[in-house]
Each structure stands twice: as structure tokens, then as C-alpha cells.
Length: 421
Image (tube, rainbow, N blue to C red):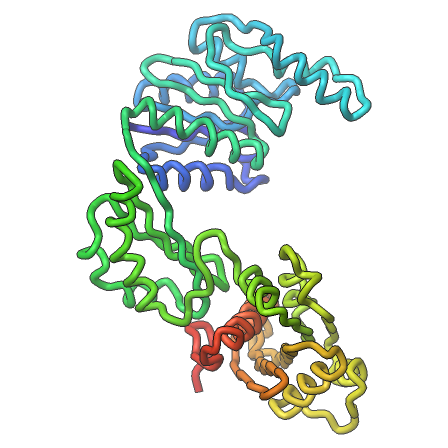
């Protein structure tokens, strides 16, 4: 089956808005075992849209059209779809009533122009939007089945995942189940990951595809599988999953929908343990990552943030005279933080940045200290890069060191991102 994604909107065409919707749809289709052959971007112009619909109808079996379902004059998808299919627009009464109820529940009267969103091509298949005002629909144009979706990302994602892809799978005749296995790692770049997994293709059937998606500081390694039954999926994926775990080892942070910070909070909560954090030059990102998880109130006792060593020391009633940036200071701060908060773990992250010759990036020394009631461990590293890069890297490194401490893993394994001595 040949699939085309057709995204509409002047803001997409001109680059004012980054087209993340296409990336999401293409990834979801690929993960479902479907293949995208073409991707088209077209502005809010009747002639251009009509030509795009005509071309897509000639070459594709299924077309997902994204955008153009709003209430304004430049939203043209319903009008052009009806024209291309050779039918008239007609009022979809149930959707109009839902729109009115939507506004009424917010104490407002529906604007007249929203009526346009309930005008659909005659004979089309209605596709519900449970979280927005732009419904979707499907209609045949030429030899292709067109699926129209709203441009609002969260609305599009739910519609595509829950309603459009199942319809396309049914249309394709594929009687399959799919699964996407994801491994989230820190410290391994794409090139090294590819080397570590050399030979994995020989262990996998053609129904399993290996892929990588780098979003620094993490790398996502994906195994996408298609089979007839869940049992066949298990058999197809098991050898490859085992190989990834063995070869990536301690660098795997978590799997599937779990996050690094979520895993840390869950582990602390399950062991009735608590943590306090102290961080320097990371804008509070370490504590922020932890407190944005569920159940964080049970385990996060304190988060201290400052760019000044003196202020950090004063915050935990530690002598601030003659302080020097170094591992001894980090250990002392961690020990005082542990006593000051009565936490089970204290995580201290110190950062010292020195501009390079070109001033576009800095050489940054990171010192991480983790203390508990029995011992204190340190981790030192150097990163080279801009401020944003260093902030992301130091935050991830600190949280990873805490994860490793909780799991009794070595915290000083070198990553691909740090300068080697």
C-alpha cells in the first residue's frame, strides 16, 4: 500500500511553523508496518490544494491530509475535498450540536463561523475528534482514500493513532499486530550504538526493523515489529531485545514509556527513601525533572539552586570561607545537605565553565557528589559545547549517577559526550 502525507498551511510552507505533525504521522505509520511514499506541503491556496489532491489521488492508495479544518476563511480542506470528490458540502447536524455544547459548557455562544466546521462533503465517513472543534472525515478521491485530520498536534495525534491508522490497516488488508520496543540510553552516540549492535540484523526476521532517534542527551533505540499474533511478536523480538540489553549494559536508562526521572522517583518511593538536590549553573533542571513526576511529593525533600558556591554552602550551614571548586567541596556539600534535610540521599552537582578561544562554546567541568548514610561517591567529567548543550548534559549525567547509585551500578563509566583525559 502506498501512502502519502499531505500537510497544508502557509505557516508550514514558509517555515514559520516547524512541521512536527508530519514526523509524528510518518513514525506512527512506519511503526504500524505501513510505508510512506510521499510527503507534500501545500499552502492555503485553492489552486495549489486542488492540484495536490489530484496528484495524490493518482499515485497513492491512502492519503492523510493534515490541517485546513478550522473556522477561518483560509481553512479550505472541506471545500476542496468536496470539489475533488464531485460532491456538495452538507451540514453534519450531530457535530454542529456538539460544537454548540462545547461553547455552552464554557459559558460562551458559538461564533457563527464555527458552523463551517460542521460542513462536510456529502457521503463522507465521519471521524470523531474527542478533544477539539475540528472533526475529521474520510472520502474517496479518484483511486485513493483521503483521511482529513486537524492541524492541532494533540488532536491530530489522537485521531491518527486511534482512528486513522486502524482504518488504513483495514484498507490494506493487513491482518497484523504491531509492537514498538524502545530503549532509552545516555552516554552512547548513534555511531557507537550502531557498532555495538553489529550483527543484530542477522538475528532478526525481516518483520523486525532496527532504528535510532537521537535527541540529546538521550538516544532512543527502536525495534519495530509486525506479526500475525502477539506470540509471534514475542518470538521475533526476544533475541534482539536480549542483545540490546547485553551490549548497551548500564547505559540503558529505561525502556518504553518510562522516563529516567520517573524510574528514580519510583525506586525511591518503593524503598521508602528520599532525596535532596543541590545544583549549580543548571537552572534547577535536575530538581525540576524530578518534581514533574507522579508521587514526587513523597520522595523529594529539597532542591537548592545557585550559581554561587558560597550561597550553596550557606544554604546548608556549611563554612563558606576559602571554598574551592573541586571534589572535596562537592563531597562536603553533599554531606551537609544530607544532614540539613535528613534525606536518605543527597545529590550535588557543581559546574565550572571556561570560555574557549572562539567564545561560542565553553569547556565545562562537572563534579557530581552523591551521599547517603554510609558513603559518598563522586563523578567528574568535562563537556565542551554551548550553554544549552552543557545544561542538558550535566542534568542528565547527574540524574544518571543517581540512578546508578540506587541500582548499585558504577557511576563513573565514561560517556561518548565528555572529553577524555
